[in-house]
Amino acid sequence: MPCGDKTYSGVLGTNYLNKNLKSILEICEENNYNTELIATSSNVHATPASFYTNVSSLKKYEDISMQLSTNKIDYFKGGGKKHFNYRQDSRIFIKEMKSFDMVKNLKGFQKSEADKIDLFTYVRAPMLKQRKRSPTARVSHSHFRKI
Image (tube, rainbow, N blue to C red; front, side, top):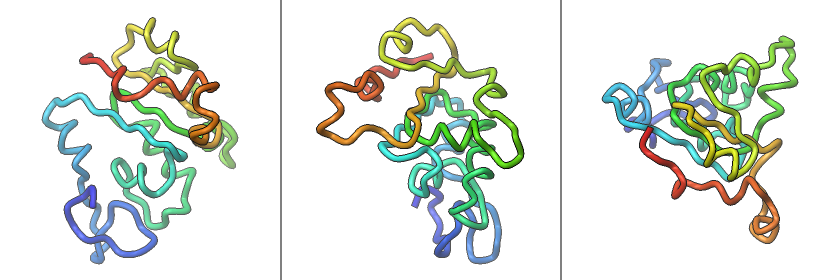
């Protein structure tokens, strides 16, 4: 319950009266806390998306990706890059997210001086047995620093 209120099945960040709810992440942003979102799934999957989006269907991946691309999250890592690049409206959110430094691995993360950092995998984070070989798997919340 990232919103502190009951939602109904199939929606994100909306209550039974169709009213948008604020999530704990949004409340933290309003109070000038640094925020991060780390997902082993796609960033547009229902669980991570419930922290930053308000949509009438959890299957509206393009709406969800648009809301993430304009969100104030300082750092996020997860899958779902395809929802930001290959869209029905032909927009390429990866290019539009100019306030983010798009890093590809731990070295890029450590070198970044940006206020906002994003690390995307194409679909989702690697499975556990593949993580030792994956450069993106090594960037975790323990690497997040106060910006």
